[in-house]
Length: 375
Image 1 (cartoon, rainbow, N blue to C red):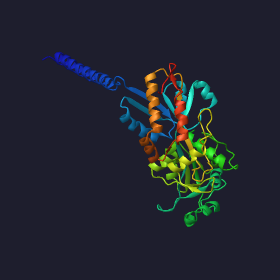
Image 2 (image 1 turned 120 degrees about the horizontal axis):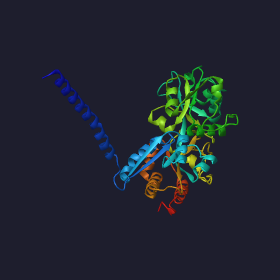
Image 3 (image 1 turned 90 degrees about the horizontal axis):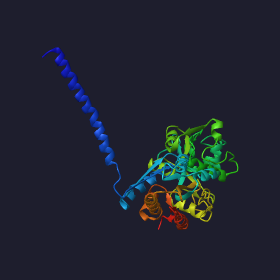
Image 4 (image 1 turned 60 degrees about the vertical axis):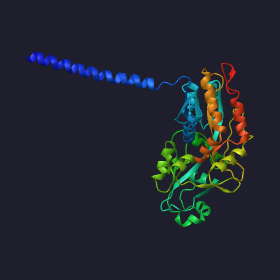
């Protein structure tokens, strides 16, 4: 065989192999795209927003596929601000938010409505050098917590902390407190700072999803992005303290403080103390179906609590089947006993009857193409 013929055959074989290699992924992509198509009658519902409820929404959406297999629900924890923007822009079917929709956002969204879904607690986590793993829980009262975040209480052996923790007095070091807060805007911070504002007139930094923290100005503040960022900063920094959602602390087995509430009783955050906080404010809802539930007067109420909300369009949803499936899922979430248990196991509390009735009545006002969605 001549060298020219050999070279020609080599080129032809190589070209054939390349064409085959290029064709295979294309066929595979087509096959994959066909396999992800929804079955007839099935609905995919997309939501995004607050990270506060991600653990329970994950549990609920997993369980709901057995209640209604025709529904696929996706929820992405991108933060309350991102969720509100997405529902206004129309890129999601529902949003999750721990912070309230502003008047400007209501105007931009045209037909938005907030619906409380569950209540959650914000807890104070801590890392005290030398403290035994089986030591009693740290106790803080309202004024002391404000003092720590105001940087007027700077050391762990401050008399105010020692007085609240006689069993830990010998273990509280003469070391500065590193105070951790969220660096990103969050509904968790909004709940926490609303509580600080209610706890004491000494808190003058205001309340909101993002504020200027006095501890940063004092030089002992540290920011962390998200629950995971705050938790990592506390866990990796001896003699530090920060705040995260209760469900995050429970899931990750992070020690958190008990708090002395407005009535003077030391309270641990759990489903029962959250139910008590909701009951304190059951008749305090605005016409937007929102309420602040921090610093309740009840004897058994946990003082740093907040609702997490879903945000929906009430008249402009164009896919009526999707709207029906979404509202049926919401109704199941707030009324089903197994959904309530899943929430409680994670440290959340479902709505008491008085609040549940308000939400169901408001859901009954949602329309699609002029017709009531939830029958």
